[in-house]
Length: 261
Image 1 (cartoon, one colour):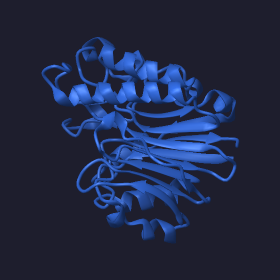
Image 2 (cartoon, one colour):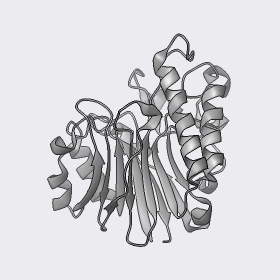
Image 3 (cartoon, one colour):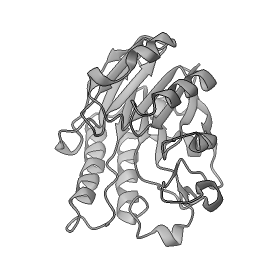
């Protein structure tokens, strides 16, 4: 049994202590982080190694993006995809001794205007989603798990108000279609929603809210997917809402699932 956690940490060096707290509280076998905002050599990997996570596969860049896979178990670097041809650290993959591959993905947020002609950031986001679709259509995943901040809340219950969010970046129809196409192209299953099919689920709350918990205008932007041959191996999904209330938090919270590999 393998527990995997994914978390957009919004600066690994700034929130190193929160990662330590999560490790001590939950002890996942594998922890995938996004938006590390540091080159690989500046990530505090020694801290996590001392806590029992000596294996790491990372891609980083100064001040932006960055993805890391930390593990109690041995990992083999399985490469990375230059998503959208942006030249940014938005994907890294690792292979476990059992042969299963973990993809850690950070899709661009896309800015504030959902118009690819007027907003280059939104155009980049759609390009990244199309790249994921085309990649997994050409190379169908086998014994694979994909996690990360995909920056799209696809379902009506993945946002606080479906009607009011239809024109807001992260829940627009074109983004939802892009994410759905990528999922279907690879035969992926949304593990969290397979386990928790009904009710509101959020993994992100804006910093702009005076009281995030009281307003509770969240979005489910962070995902765990399983390839078709692992869909029945996944279970026990959880979203750690309480982490949003930790001191100096990320605006995202961890999402976890277990796999029988």
